[in-house]
Length: 404
Image (cartoon, rainbow, N blue to C red; front, side):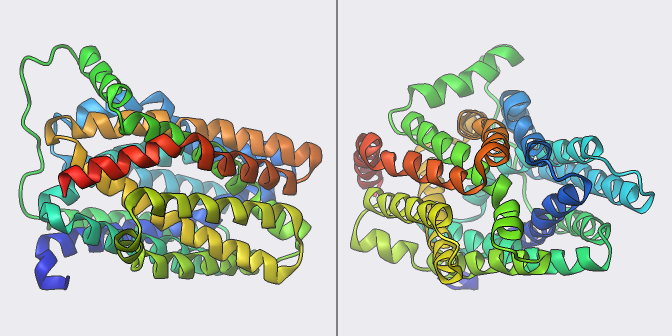
């Protein structure tokens, strides 16, 4: 698939997506590095992470109704403006020397609200700009771009900018979010779904998305499996900066480059996912993702030998795009457009609502026993999915084969 095959509208969306994720990459290190300059309490650092994902629990379901009522591109544009405003606010508190964990958490919460609206609607826009048979390729290109922007370029650049001045990564990320708005404004076409006037009240429509996910034979187990991933994954993300700087003795810049190793592996894997699926199956490829993630967690938990740490980060990079490309494609193929927004936010409500709890859990465990024990627990939980999620892997293979 080349640029001409995927079409101009896809590549406009891809460029906007890349700019947005580069902004996310700058904040990926900006938030934790600023947090640890304000406190050395792992529990308080975890509050910032929890605040960013709390919106999925609070506004996830009503956001889905909005996404299925209004133009999804316009919603994403408004969300990006809100995220930019929040980051500018954080940067100004840093310049004024009044930044606190509380203010940082509020800013992270607003950024999270924008993320709910963006992540809930843009996957449906992808379906509008490419043909059904191109979805795996389109998703892999988006995933590669997300990884390059969010982890390969963003974290080391963000860490370097933070060393110059802690406010700069937040100003830069805000500028990139505003650039995304300009790019999305160039995306031609209407992305407003058809509204069924018989669907009932706002509250009834919110419930419909949740009932749809819960009653779906593939989406329900997939969302619950991702919830387990999200809980332990966010626990690990919360304490990674502590593991790197305190247990391994890395600097902030070295921490940023450690994330870059993850990104390199993830980009390479993004282009190999379809080959893996063709040689095995969708379900078997997801099992590979589980094995890679569990191995990564155990290495981070039990080793301080730097080559093993690098190997662990590489395995995490292989795991992430494999799971995400396959699960995104499954949702796009299995769900009708009229309910896609409510399905997506309900799915994220089930799957990602555990992230704030995971962040708090990681902070408590790290403070009490050390960050390495967070990863030991994560490896145990994710490894158990090889047994508990076996029926789901079979269902995904069956569903995707029927749609082929």
